[in-house]
Image 1: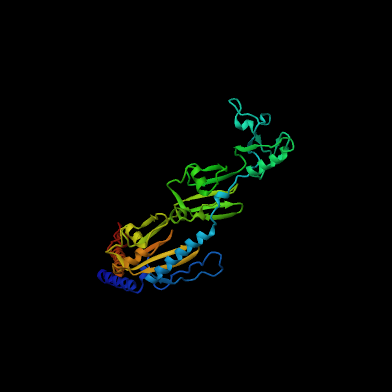
Image 2: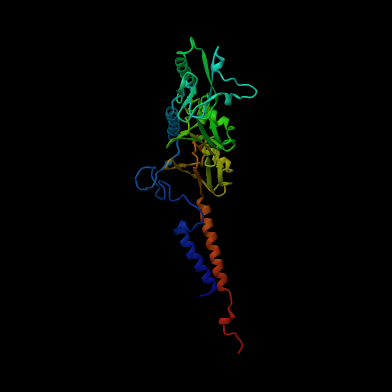
Length: 383
């Protein structure tokens, strides 16, 4: 077979193969998911349904209204998840380790004075591990779990047997018995002592130095005993949902997550594919495309723009026909979720050109090989 005939036969065979199969084209392709996903995707977490293909939903005005309604319902559910804390009713309750001072008016012998050589801490009464303090005439008094008002009434009743018209005051000079833990993206993570100021989430975060630049204000977890709750302070700041400012209890752990998961991925035929951060969990499809430099006008198929989503264990795929400029109105109203993948498919002519490019390189290699002389096999060796 001649070299020219071999070249022509190889080119024709590979070209026919390229026409009959798009799989030889390099790169990703969305050709297999026009109506549903090309692979079986897992169902929602906690359900035993087997993996299945997910239908592709077309991005339309009706779909956008549906998604916006879903977001509003999520905000309402978050609002109802926590009751508004009654900060006015908060009263600190004494516990072991706290130190109190007791002042009995007109009876200095019952009051240990604090002076330049005695601090209020050393002059006070420490609550013992069994929850009691010892006070003259009153004896051992159970004060753990009681407020200052309750302790004042209890001491007054006990001293009334010995002192006429008792007038006394009780104050906490050192708070030691109760604490919470604030960790994660705050400037000074660690232990925060609970005192007579209501220990809300916002209060304790401020005591820890406030948020760092990487803090995700929408993603805060509160662990109490063996249960973990989600707290959304962004909803508090922007929507006034006071229920998110939870009143903490001793032993609570507040963790402020970073925003490393708060991003979307733009792939396919765009100018600058990559991952792009969301601002306060907000970014539209149009913004994501703009961040990546827009679709590549030479290689993309703007009619095939997809959003692939896996949110809270549920997989969804959305499709936008972006060939018309006014479709960007829909793209601007389409809200993305963290970890969404935006994919812009390749134009068919570009995919074909890539096939031809691969075919041409293969044929060129075969042609070069056929044109190479191998003297060892041509009997040209020395006698």
